[in-house]
Length: 218
Length: 241
Image (cartoon, rainbow over all chains, first blue to last red; front, side, top):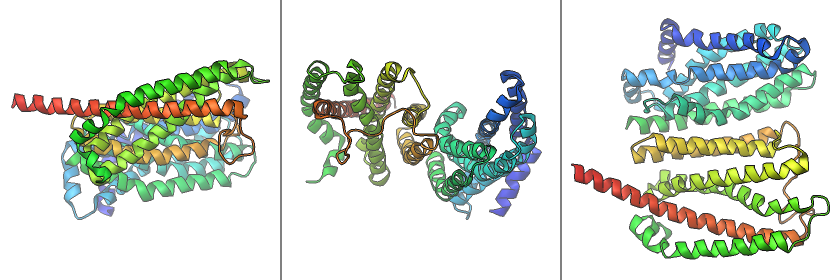
């Protein structure tokens, strides 16, 4: 599992596209929003948590089809399926690798971009915490969506349609936690719900994803 | 004699075909009775006026939109566990009906909400969860259409249906987090103190029965159509080879 994780990380960093793409997209969205809604500090600070969360979600969505598609095309996915590592483990590692290459950099970049959106001072901690807790769920759900559509020629649009409604609870709880933090309220309840979603995703979705992969490799 | 005998497509068609017209006409008759009763022989609500009559379409369609997904979930599970093709095709057949029911519920809700709440749409928990349900239906149908091999499609859509069910329930409770919203809470439950008055309740029950029968008839009909379509495809493939 460790070897597979290292291989995926090395591929993502060296191939050049996957690693920077999500981060660059995140940056572009956050920089463009003030141009779109105007520079009033109050408006920006009110919508900042939502913007950051939506941008993070879209950035994660952008690189999802790379999770399995590249391995499927060059034939290494069937090799992984026949390796001693169970396919559930492969799906889990793929989700984790996707998180390390997209979710983790997004989480670390979010506070810096919060300055651009004039986020309330109390919200930074919650922004970090909610993204750190929530983006793993985005990656794992995405791995499931990618596993379902891996056999399709142009599965990108379909995968977005499948994954979008699955992202709703994560987005709601994540943005809600930051919003409550920004207003000085207690954000623990949405954060706990968020952590629950993430843990549930990591516990159950590898099974669903590997079931879908088995069907697609049949 | 067990229920699994109907997993045989031939037996399924033979058994259900005579029932389809009965169910269809029965549901139409019941719907006519229920809607005429509801539209013309019930008093206007003292606050909502005659707009309250949208109720007789709105509530049954919303109910069926959720139950259609539930039926698809059960059919998907049966397909994954027992590999009966009729079950997978029944799930496929129910999805477009579920979409239409969701759309009817959303549309009548908007028409009702405009005079009552002063807005066509609000990001209220119930409305939002229906929108999410609509997206789930679209994704499910799109996945069926996108995959050529029927068994692969059935497997993948079944997995999606199960995962989607969990997330649909999750979303339903997640949107509650915003606020209580404009939509009233359930007013047709059997164990509640505050229900709608009996004058509205009986025609509504008739309408719900009509919608249920209509749904069953349409699902049986569409499942038989899917079975025949697959048979034709198999014949064509055999002729070509």
